[in-house]
Length: 223
Length: 223
DNA sequence: ATATATTTTTAGGCATGTCTAAATTTTTAG
DNA sequence: CTAAAAATTTAGACATGCCTAAAAATATAT
Image 1: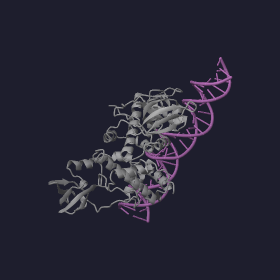
Image 2: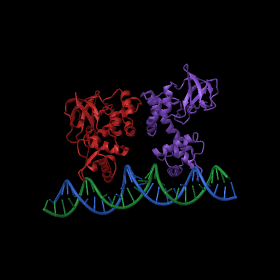
Image 3: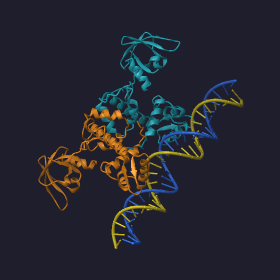
Image 4: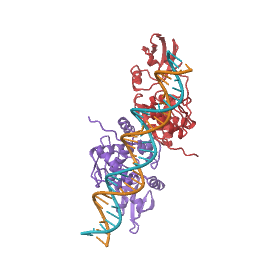
């Protein structure tokens, strides 16, 4: 068995960013996109890409962006698995609200212990999704995919179920809390305004107008 | 309220080391002692002591060692609180054995989130001791003290209860596992050999000879 | 008391991960 | 097609936290 070089906390954050930006690591990602995500300068990203390429975690062609290698993708998925498991733990066991978990999970996702991850998974009952509706990879890196769409892409006069959020910033989640729009809520799309891209929806017997920005961050699936 | 400067992971490890070496931070600790504990060179310790002194976490008199300030002690206790709470979590909830928890707790103790610590404490039922018998500080930094002694200091022909371990290295704990010598076990001290400092003890109806080294690492209290 | 040994500090160097400023390559627009 | 704009990389710098080697202070032993 081959000994995996130590991957630092910083490197893990880059791998995760590249994974998310490149649609699960399948696409090539630009230096600038990574810089925005990581909140670092492009030059810092280039430096790090050289290091990750050296470790065979990404393929880097000068001026052409990077793509995760098999190894890089596998590692990114491990970090994401830990992040999402910890989120479930925080909400289910420690009574955190879904808008409070992200920051803490960002720290916990870097804890290195195979046994910890496995046992945590078992303790939580092998959950399939985190509190934001995102799928949790299993120990082999496989995870469920749903035929989810964004509310902004929904058909009018159709019924859906809310299954996830694209943006899990506290502000967005607090908005959903305010209107009791939780995952699993059934909703009907009543109309769409061409002028501003806003939607009128009905759920729990209330009618709500949501802006284009809200609609572009809420995942739903047809009933 | 005053804003506490960020304390790095490395700084936290030094604070913890000084706390343990200086008998809960009450005594002055030498540079070399810290270096041994941290497994770093004395010169690195001096560098770090300057930084900690700058942040008012230790008092450092040149060539005279360091002592924790109130702030430094309070912070060390917070780290120790987290370390011990996570150990309880790993053993009670995730089925870790007491000889496996240390390394993982060393990572988890640095996670920064007041709420996480408080909720974890509550989730575990506000435990008073960790799996090795060490007291867990409460949120204000107070913790139980027991009149424990080392087996090596025990009276012959006296009955005691095993309440903790001084050294919690995996090797020592595995030795105790082997003989089923768990915390809470009642034992009788039968004799002590002047020649090698070993003890003969009886517990669970078995008789066992333990070396000086074992005796110097097992805490007991009189029944 | 003084020479030797030990401890501690200083000085200078190195890797990590970041930055700014300048140079280079690629993309876009006229 | 070429000039300007945008993206990317290079070069050089800095803070952190560690190191080695040498100097300084303290402790120990005869």
